[in-house]
Length: 164
Image (cartoon, rainbow, N blue to C red; front, top):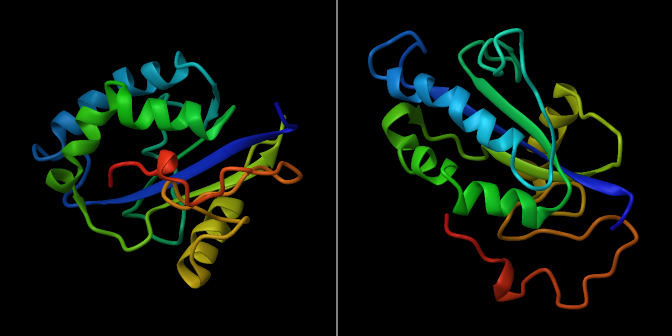
């Protein structure tokens, strides 16, 4: 294990206010999905407000956006949560609740013990939009190992491809 952990941020633009009937099922799923994340292998930390989720936290210069940010022990741990846990059922419905945002997700490595800030997250999304995947901001499809760790299989190895 390296001295780094994986940070992730994703942002979403709801089609309607969170209090709307359209978003009721999404809002009802927040606590169970957050509890699932909190208890998942490899979970380290997640951004949350006083209500236990991050929907009241404003970021990225747009009060309509909601943000989710977390830290995980590894890319494999986050991938397992995102694509093989109960989270996937909610993720499959995202188009019912949210507008499409061109770059809505970014991954990056942080030193173990570091809690990323919203400013860091915005910087990583901006970087990913500007230059595409790099060691400083990447995606599941094209990711990079932690600093100082060689990836003998290569970042484009098929074993790293995930469903979009």
